[in-house]
Image 1 (cartoon, one colour):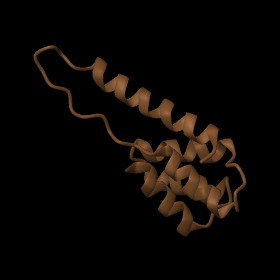
Image 2 (image 1 turned 90 degrees about the vertical axis):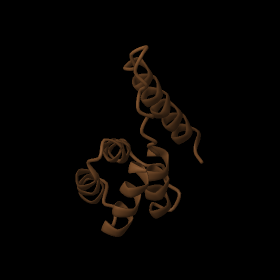
Image 3 (image 1 turned 45 degrees about the horizontal axis):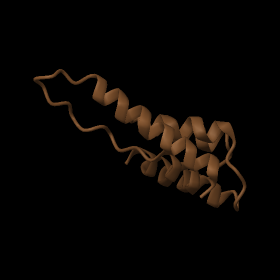
Image 4 (image 1 turned 135 degrees about the horizontal axis):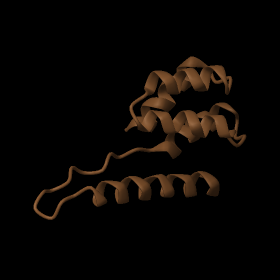
Amino acid sequence: MRTSTRIAGVLAGLTLALGGASLAAPAVHAAPAVHADVSACINQVERELHGGEAPASVRASCSLAVGGSQDTCVSGLTGGAGVTKGTAVTACKLGAQ
């Protein structure tokens, strides 16, 4: 896994974890933070690019999958990044998990 991808994944996880924790009231238990794997989405696309590093448009599209916008993620990957639809669907599903 590329260092930049690993760092992006860690930062996304920290953001989600800290954002969910700050919303919790003392007497109310917060729902668990959504487990999102942006790096898995990016890695899936990079495999299709034969090891080439994913451009910023791929990172942006994969981030959309985290918010539940899988259709928008797929459109972004197939249109802007030139990824095949099958890979885009798989990558966006991984990003939403």
